[in-house]
Image (cartoon, rainbow, N blue to C red; front, side, top):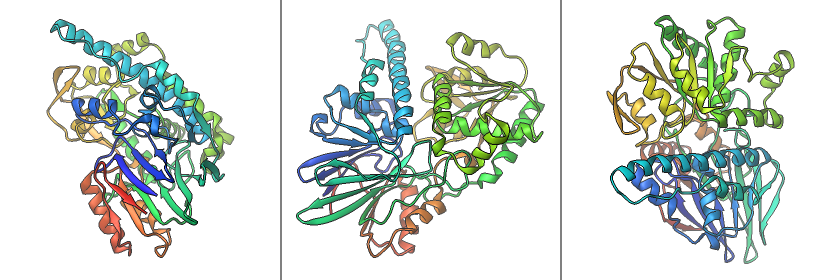
Length: 464
């Protein structure tokens, strides 16, 4: 088996790893790279391999940086199966169509600008129609059920505890009379978070590809989520401001809504209008309700006593563009939860443009912001922010809540990898993290007695 790394190497987005086994090739994830515009366009459009040469795809979860380039893969000739969990299939189906819609609209906007300067128009990376073709290739497999991928190759999904349907992947191969085992963590979640279950150990392997997003960084405890959120919201309400929350439509939006539900029930927050302005989040919330097999005991108990944890009496799910635009005229304090989570596209850009110049307002960051994204510039509290080509003076307060992160922190990553038998685990590869975070995680793993920890660069290959 040869492992080839072609995405999320020394960076956080664009997850894509190749396994060359017995003359066949398996692709682990096929995510969109997010960063500087020109580099993103080039890397997402041009695969470093022939899509027709891939025999099977195994998808860890539905987040766009792991699944978002599947429509382009299929557009360029891939026709094989895409294995994933049932919840990931349902979420990916709506998320990829939404991504295709965004690609079309972004291209339409850019072509209007190009026309003014008499420049050649561009084509979208893929369309809604391209995304719909991916759905025909999905093959859903439940957790902990071993399934054949190719001849002499089988795999198993274990709950990664990151978002609904997220999985770590254990792969077993037979080559030259020998059995080899390797694992891919996907994105590892946190313990004791609301809604979904805790991460599950996949079983021992000889080689492990591990995410490293928050290597060396510690999150605030999950139990602090509500109290800190209530304090910041109340502070903004008292000065008459709005709260804009750029949130990933899948996972983070539902976590926030559920936390708000509990805060209102306990009387910890004054009641203000709350708007979820993301058609994708609305559809994703319905899928959450469908896949209760992924829920932990806490939310089952909540459903038993409070019915619907995702439907607050003062919560408004926004569907149309017209409704979204009307939020700009909203008077008085309110909260607007809108995608995208890294502020690179979607309706949240309009809300940021409308609120960023008012010191009464708060921009609440609740998820990881990759380098070179608008979200990262907000986290860095830059004084001037460019949105839709226009520069805005940032006067709104920016608050970061890492307790909402769906990624394991440094100690939780060490806890997860520490469960593997060191006598069997021969090699660890760190992906999906900035190099500084990976180096910190590498040091922590080595202190635990893991001597062979690699931080691969893009295009690097390793033979087991």
